[in-house]
Length: 534
Image (cartoon, rainbow, N blue to C red; front, side, top):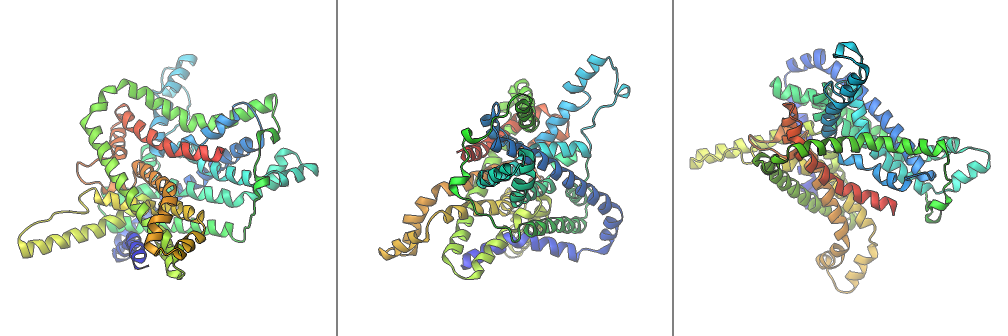
């Protein structure tokens, strides 16, 4: 119990640090921020969140309904492929979309050659470096959150409710809108919450596309304007967005109850009506288009660029960034699995409310965007380093330097705090599959609590622990928002290496690093797809 409370306090420290920095900062920065930065950044953030949410709902709900309710060509393949865009980080999606749709890209080049245009002044074309472009890119790579939630909900509903509606004269579309969709509302809200958190967390895509959201404003205020208190005050505004979002999510799920029978929840192919003619091809197109935009386009662009720059495979910068990424991500995965197991085990064995409260406190990090988390992590670590250096200088005449804030430890700490919820949730789900009677049976056979834990629970929990570690490892490999602010001098991960090359308009040089990140991200995506299909 004491250990879980200490872990929760360490995980919650960045949140407290942001509040302290913001509240102790001067009012001069606040007045400037309120007058010049906050109105535009808040409006753009709100528009980006709303428009991205609407687009992801359109993509996710329609595709989930089609693959769970009907049979049409390539349905099985597309039901798995629709999850693949989750392997594409939003910043990599932005880089490839710009290369594809920009003036020098293949689309506009073909357009000019077909119609005989000579310059950009001769015609109008969609500007991908805009708010609309950011919405298109975000929705293309984030819609699987809504798709996965809706697909699971539609499968759990079974066919009973839909069959009853159809016997009363309701068509498939009306049945979906009036029966299936209201029943899936809690799942949709959960998926939208994840989409919104990822949208608020993004910094690489919005900066590259020129959309100054609150997240980018925090980065700009801290590094370019040199105002840490101002950045912390903006961070509080962003945390307010997250708090409102989580409150809406809980309110939407309040009093929602749903019970699914396994016999009615299983929907076999032979029970699904087969679409024929134009309807079948429209369903195929509706499911194939999101996959093409969210995965095939970025992936094929990266492959084509990587084939031109195979000489970079042995580039020392790439090898060093890969080693740094694997080291930090592996350490974060191990730490989150151990801590998540500790918290979940305490909640399982302890009857006190303090154990559950410790788990909820430790889960605050996932709701914090990376830029906010970076502020909360760096300042306490820097204070500790300076205090330790002062003590060592005064007593021993030695300088310890920046042991924590000046090394990869800061990135490891941020990733651990941010993705602890993911590991804990996976481990807790694994514990829920194990009956409490296992513990009781082991105790009646003479095993103490430690022996029960090592000999009984851990072997049964191995799949959940490995899954949790894999998820955290992949997410840490892709993390950019916190890493770009916390990395020490001459320390690159794959994500920051991609960011640096893209900032210098050298997308081809970043292609191999981007492919590594995408291929690593495909592993958990494929596992999730296969488990859903089974």
